[in-house]
Image (cartoon, rainbow, N blue to C red; front, side, top):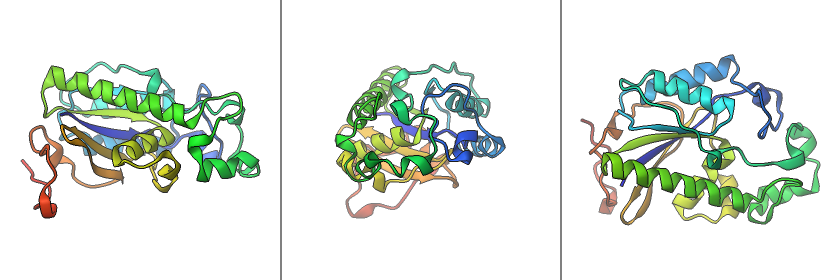
Amino acid sequence: MATVILVRHGRTTANAAGVLAGRSPGVKLDETGHDQAADTADRLAPIPLVGVVSSPLERCIQTAQAVLQRQAQAHDLPTDSDLNECDYGSWQGRTLAELTKEDLWSQVQSHPSGVTFPGGETMAGMQARAVSAIRRHDAAFEVEHGQGAVWAAVSHGDIIKSILADALGMHLDLFQRLSVGPASASIVHYGTNGPRVYAINTEAGDLSWLAPGLLSSEAPVGGGAGHQTS
């Protein structure tokens, strides 16, 4: 099966201000975010990606464009609304400092599977649409480019955490244990025996071992010899 690199967008003006941007229009990368996106693009440059799919929000498109600019082969940049940020409803645009005082905050931390944001979506629904989108694109890239295909999805922190939780077989109520920083790269291989998570929240390091054909579809008993480079 194919392999997806889950890339979170770089830091934004809202991130720096401690504001929950949600789906607010016009939230873009700040200077640090542009630098982070460039660094991630450099990390992914040795990997001939068969495609990049992005959330439709500006900050993700900016990050995805940075990744594509460092690829040897030109690609279009499709967006998918199912990779969009969680619909936080009336929480959108408020500061995190304010939101920590809301009664719902503790449930978001400890029981997210039961959360419905006021005027927004459920966190369980968020996960379902995001996982479905990733698996749909992954299958399509494999059909078109073969089992060694590697592609990237650029999305948001809670979206990526929920996808990783699914791949790890974790209940959504545990997904807050995962951390996904700005412009980080996490890697999931959807093999015939189920997903294998190769990396979570990486911000540095050589990724050339992800070149097509270098991943096994089965887990090595005993841990194996590590990544094989080309």
